[in-house]
Length: 107
Image (cartoon, rainbow, N blue to C red; front, side, top):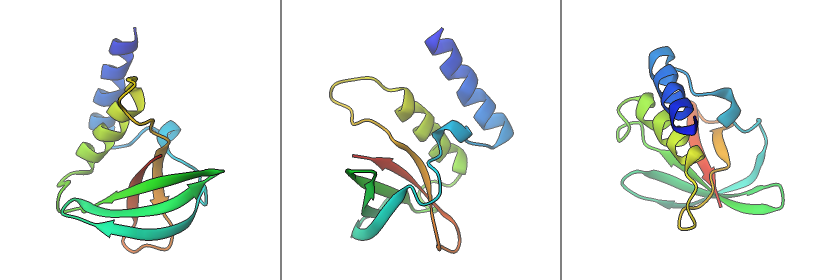
């Protein structure tokens, strides 16, 4: 059933244009954001999520021409289970950014 539910979730996200709210971290969940590096795909920040140091990957809108591709990456990463893949903590809207910047959070 896991594969079936995953496919349904991806299809629903594509059709509705929304990312599942269960993937979002609450506002203020990531603290002390400091810009670390910028590359062709976007900006990487270092922050604190609880007691953990995390990477916050904010993608350039130019690279991800549609928010759908970003949402799909979040959904796929959330359901990945492999010893060589980092866990996925969630999607985070970086506060005080105009326009709104949405990022992926991982260790």
